[in-house]
Image: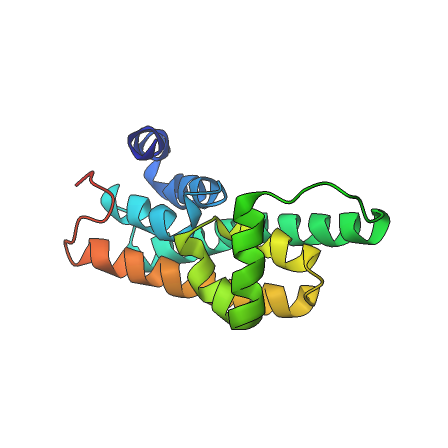
Length: 157
């Protein structure tokens, strides 16, 4: 998948490569960290690659948070059995709170899914957005800088 995204982003004209990075980073499981890495690999200025990846990831996360918030308000409580990942995420939320799950959750699930789950648990939409944006910036910056420094974090260099 990463190779396909690299191929996709490299087809954009150099002046619009940042847009390709932004689009790639909006995809769950690609996130700001792989988006930034892809941008650096295809030759986008690292600062631009990181910023574009962060903006793309934040935009898609905001859509998920607002969607989950809307659905939570509209939905009635059901008796559906929660999935195992949901149970694990809920346990992490109870133990580490919004900040902990936001900062570490991207190691388990995409920020879009994690943020929607946090809102579904009843967490404040504004706090979730705040901590998710911090997490997205930190992860995107770390991976973008690692690739810029020559460390192969995506297996494509």
